[in-house]
Image (cartoon, rainbow, N blue to C red; front, side):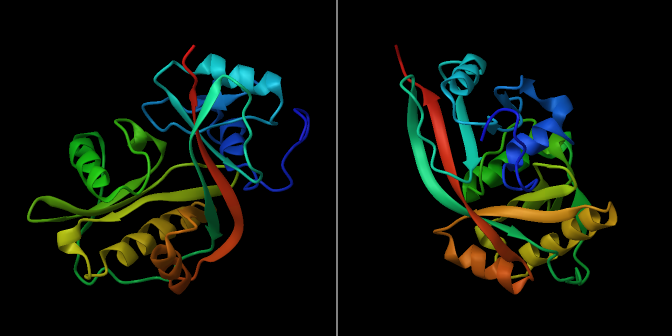
Length: 233
C-alpha cells in the first residue's frame, strides 16, 4: 500500500484509520507514521511498510518506547527495530446480545478510578492499559464491596466503528456474568451513538473467542499483532 492509498475498509488498518479520522486530534506524527500518546496506549501505525515510514515511526519513539501495530500483513521491519512480539489476532464485529444487569450496579469509571483500573488490568492482562487509557472513551465497571470486580471500555475509534477493550473480571468474581453484563452495556452505548462495536482478541485465546461468538459477534478477519522496539545502537 502506498502512502496515498486508503484501506479498503476502515477496519483493515484500524489504528491508522482512527488516527486519521475520529481520533486524529490525539495523533502524534504525520503522514508517514502516527501513534497515540504513550500514556494512553502504545498503538501506532503507518500507511505502508516503506523504509521512509519506518524511519518516521522510529523518530516518534524514545529508546524505552514500544510500538504496537495491528496489520493485515506480517511486519518485517528494517534494521533499527527489534520485534518483541509477533502473534496473530482475530478482529470480531457485531453487537453483543443484551443481558440484564439483574440488580448489579454498572458505573462509569473516571480519573479517580485509574489506580483500581490499573491494578485490575495488571492482574488479568487484557492488553495495554496506562494512566490515560480511560480518556480514549467510555469505561464501565462493577464494584463489589468497594473492590473493582470487573471493567470494560472503548479504545480505537476508526471512522464509525468503536473498539471494545479491557474486558476483564477479577478472578474472585468470575462466574457471575459480569463480563457479559458489561459487554451488553457498553455495546448499547456504542450503538446508541450510531457506531458499530468491534474488538480484537489473540487467536490463541479460544475461550474468549467462544464467549464473544456466544454473545453474537463474528470474526471479520485475522490480524498480525507486532510489538516493535528501537534497537540499541
